[in-house]
Length: 513
Image: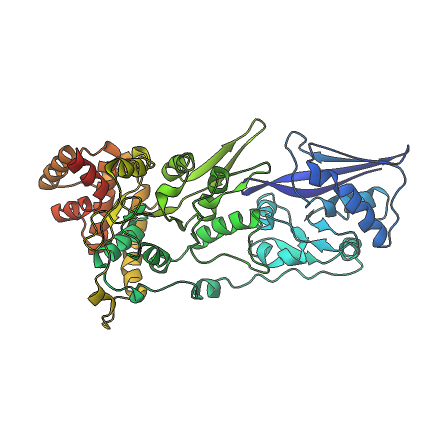
């Protein structure tokens, strides 16, 4: 007898439907799974067999064939356990033939029949809604995550017997109540630190404000102890709040990676990721034997902070170039290509030389010119070109550290950032752009028109500093953001002048030449 049941699986961060077909026929007892199952899916036969027996049902001593369609896509994960078990029970006549229609099932089974959580349930619920399926049965631990999706009934189950009784109509499972998500966005992130704690460094705070307002990448260069890491960790406190669409995108990534906290429905604050410099390229970009998102995707819609930038392996840094430009990561394999979102603000910090005290008036630099050149050569020109703002972070004088005067708080700065982002939202309405840093060359020409005196200033700076076309475009984007922060409609000469101050490495290279 043949039984069919709907389930789903994930490729990248998006789900696709999988039809689980179970056929039971006479013959020697066997259990065969086809449809490109990977190891965890093949092992489901042992979990399913034990779960059915330990739940009080009879496991058939016949030839069992399970097909996972479409057969040309490799099936990964343990979420097929529940639909396979239900398919077997349906094929033996323990379930009514039409009882499994209209639902999508997913869940991993333990040997005693309990249903364990799976990764990617948010993406799976979204796919079920898109496919017009009326209800989805998920593990109890995934109920809050799946219930975020509107216009679909989400039923949470704790064991196989409960699902069987629900399908038969013996019991009623109550659809999970759609939570009011607005309060989640209003809750403050208590892990964020405040700019009011920072003494001095007014020009660096200004650079961080501009970076937050326009979504620009930023590099801080300064001696040890100058406060580069401290400032970077306070950047999320001035970023604009996540929109609902951005929260869904971010939550899907964490759900697929299996990093969503237990009973957490939605990620509502911008993420801050700070991987160690020993990270591999697969850890940063994503990949592996079973591909999963890397740090650049986990920081999607948030901040990726790379401290001690030259200490990262050069080939690891170079793979960042494409995600910074395109806003996504594509992992191409022989059998398939997987795409992960990676729209991040890159914030990096480095010392000016190996010892860290080049040009520091309070310490003597012990590095040779060759050591300094070798140290800086770890960062390629194309990578530096993709970082909009370069800012010097000098050591703070002792008298500024001991001052008791209050400095500007994150809340005050954030109000200005949100106002600037609102201007950009209106500017880029009906496009897929959210901030100035994402403008293309065509949009740059249309949205960043400058006066003649500003053009002359930009041309002179480009010739003197040897700026690339990409660097000039980024200077224009920064100037547009500065104008937005001041509420100006057009880009004026002083906006260009200030934006040029944020290309420190370009000026340094020009002077060295």
